[in-house]
Length: 345
Image 1: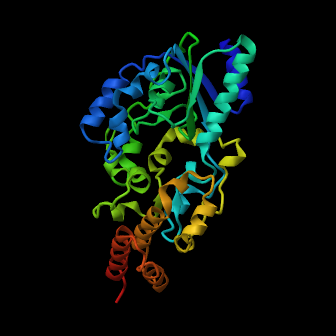
Image 2 (image 1 turned 180 degrees about the vertical axis):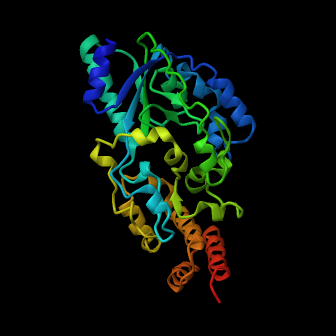
Image 3 (image 1 turned 45 degrees about the horizontal axis):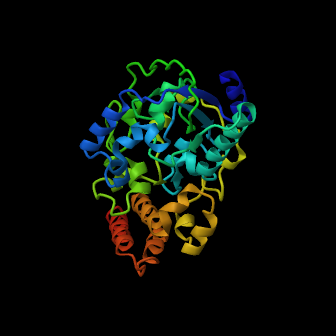
C-alpha cells in the first residue's frame, strides 16, 4: 500500500509522503525541557496539552502509524531581502501571503484517507495540520521527510518552505527510515536571527522570536525588542532565508498560496490605513485574520516607529491616537517618540 499512497499523495499535490511510527523518539523529553525553561512564553496551550503532543494514541485511540506529508508553499512573491531592506514596506512571512493553509491541507489529507478507504475498506483515521497538539517536526523527521534544523524547523535538501500535515491511522504501516542530519557545522540561521531567539542549536526561546511576538503574543511587545522587529509586521523568515538549503527550494504549485491584496509589496502606510472592517474583509481566508485588527495595528505601529521619520508617518500614527485600545495607544506613542528622536534637526 505504501507506494500507492505515495502516488495518491502526489496526485493531491503533496511534495512528499512518509510513514512514521507512533513513538516520536526523544521528542517528549525535549518538549518537557523546553516547557520547563518557559520558552513557550504566553502559549499556555503548549503547557496545557503537555505530553499529549508526544502521544498520538491520546489524540486518536488505536493509532498504529502516522502518514506524514509535505506541501510546498513558497510563493512567487517580491524578493524577501528587497522587502526587508525597504523600511517603508511591510514584511509579511511568506507562508501568510496567500490563503490560510489549515483547511486546505486537512482537506487534502481527508481526500487521501478516502482514497485509501476506497482501496481497502473503512479504517480509522484523523487528519491534522497545525490544528491539534501534534509534534509535527518530530513525526515528519521520523517519516523520512527531512531532518530537524538548528532553527527547529524541518529541513530537507529542497529547504524548508513547506507545510506539514499528518494522517493518524489504525493501519500498522512499517515506518520509513529517518533521514540523516545535513546541517553539519552551519549556524547561519542562529547568526542571522534579529532578536537572537535561537539561543542554542535546536533551542528557540519563543519569547524573543518575532513570529511569536507579532502573532501569538497579545500584550505589549518588549521595549528592547521593538527596534529589532524592523518592518516585520507578521511573522519572520530570517532563519529560513539564511539557510543554504533554501537555495534549492521549489515554488508552490498551489495557486492559493500566491500573494493576495499585494501583501508582498504593500507599504506600511497603506496597510496602516485599513479600518477594522477593511482588515476583516481583506483578510478573509487568511491566517493573518486571527490576530485581529488591534494587533495588526500594533505591529505596524512598531514598524513605522522603526522607519526613517517623515511627516506622513507621524500623521498616520497620530490618526489612531483616539483608538479605544490602551495597548495600541502605548505603541503609537512609542513610535511617535522614535520618529521624533530620529528626526534630523
